[in-house]
Length: 64
Ligand code: SF4
Image (tube, rainbow, N blue to C red; front, side, top):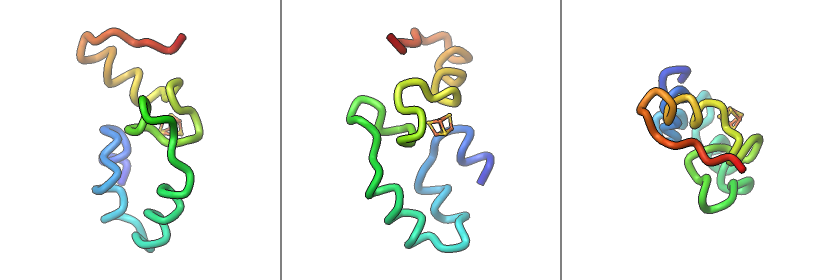
């Protein structure tokens, strides 16, 4: 699950979950803003995982 989390692969995270149905239902009920749908609602556009992946890929990080 950690590997899936690192790349924000939500489907792979659900596959690793003990209760995938409940995990997916919780995520679906707490979606982040559309522009940040690859993150979770905890940090949204401030997602450190997303920012680090972009930095490592040489992409611009827009958090303002
Ligand atoms: S939004 Fe926050 S809690 Fe969610 S994956 Fe990114 S850093 Fe982790």
